[in-house]
Length: 323
Ligand code: NAD
Ligand code: AKB
Image (cartoon, rainbow, N blue to C red; front, top):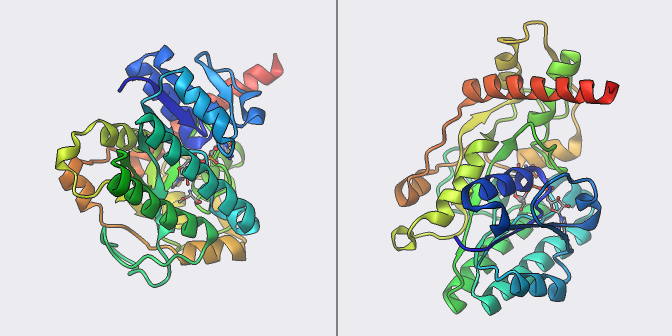
């Protein structure tokens, strides 16, 4: 890869992907962008620029100024916030993606655009969802994700823009908090287990959803962008997963390290209905066959690493706040 631009660079994925890209391709070759209010709180040492992806001219100028040839487009509104503000979510998710695709077309950039398990809906089969199947989501977030998948396919077929992407499951990480999704409970549960040994979950105990630890999500984005495209039958929206888990299963795994941890349930009807409209688990065999996708972390390995790293982080933040 040459010069890389990341949008939404200070979100849950962007904060870790930007760092991984800088380590791999060089600090000076990765330009981080996000909304100004996010950048104000950043301590990153590489180039970080304030830009609203709805502002085509500023974004296009940045791409030309830095000679960008590859874009990881992460700026987005996630499912729970999107369902509270559907008009806003449509404008941001579709408006930003359209600008990125047009800029990629004009400047001959390759682009990575993530979709989600949210691109499926109640008419999709619930287990082992195939790569190509009925989608018909019933949330605004999911509708923008399917529309995004189709638009990326269109720009590849019509204009030969090298668009690629995966359908991420819920992502679990300790560096940056998630930004308003339905799967956020799977991050909160680890914080609360370490801080209070108790978590009140807003999803029902047996709600199964696909999940993944952040190192695997970062690996997926970089691997897919690096692979020779001649082996790809699909380009956008590859199903990928690492585990299908429920709140009670994550709680049970946490109890192996923190035996006194308890979980209670206080269901949020909005987020439960969103989760109920998504499948239990996806079949990721197309990604395995076409670009050798292979996750490293299952629930056990992820929980061990997450509790250890998050514990270190919380301790250093506590020490920092006393100083
Ligand atoms: P996030 O909410 O943590 O971060 C998104 C970032 O985009 C934020 O920093 C926000 O400030 C920025 N942003 C929002 N509107 C913007 C705009 N108009 N211009 C510029 N920046 C803007 O989200 P994330 O979890 O990092 O998700 C990144 C992508 O991955 C999204 O497309 C999301 O749908 C997808 N995804 C995420 C998950 C997950 O579990 N995190 C799962 C599936 C798919
Ligand atoms: C959300 O819950 O909105 C995201 C996702 C699965 O796309 N984490």
